[in-house]
Image 1: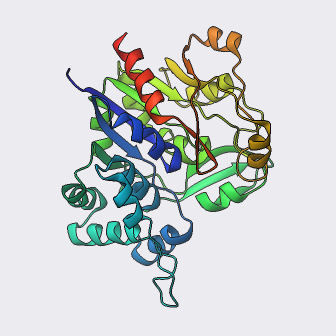
Image 2: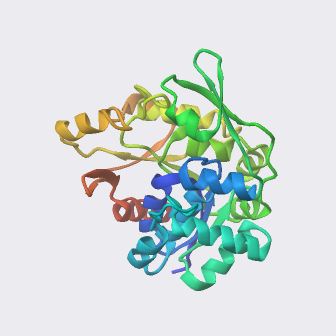
Length: 316
């Protein structure tokens, strides 16, 4: 069977989970990673080397690697020392070194790819050291992805402090794809940073590829409070220009109330409600199943089941 070319847009943990399943099936994967993270180790490296964020790229490299378990232990190892290395993830340092050696992050990723033998291509959205800005519900502007996500106020929109130059490989990946997949993850700070780039939106508008959105299982305070599935889609559609989402992956599995209660006090809030009538009116096909997967007491999507159902949808 000929591999189906897919461009996966996202960032953060949600994207890395999704890729774990997709890499095991006949997909030719181009993972487009938003690069506006500025917290912890990543933030320190951005400031010191004036470079784009590497944290989310590190996670995606791990998820697409052939020997994922060993690579994860190595790349996620954080130094515990009194020196300047304290708190840095080894994978972030390797990415920084690879970028310094090759002259840019894209070539640095290719250098690491030759060592890791990735099951797909990892493409940073831009080579620029971008800064994400957030306009909050009261009109105040917050600078920096980390501060946006930490703010208790609802986000109304996000934009870049300076317009970035989109990586040409991103445009090529979208142009040549059979399907464009918007990953689960933080809507305003992981997914939309890809779509607010005019070049990306224009290329998606011209594409005949199916657009699939993997919807979050739970809402996120400040980003998607009380959002139903259709509200997620309407927001994304508003950034997609003439194109709209063709299909959505939605979870119909049950999560125990005590687990939901635990998450309500951390970073998630409530289960995302499936509003069938509104979805029907939007003309969106549902790729519906029980996708609940518990990993170290953390709620995740069952990546393999998601991947199999996406493949079935595209082959139907």
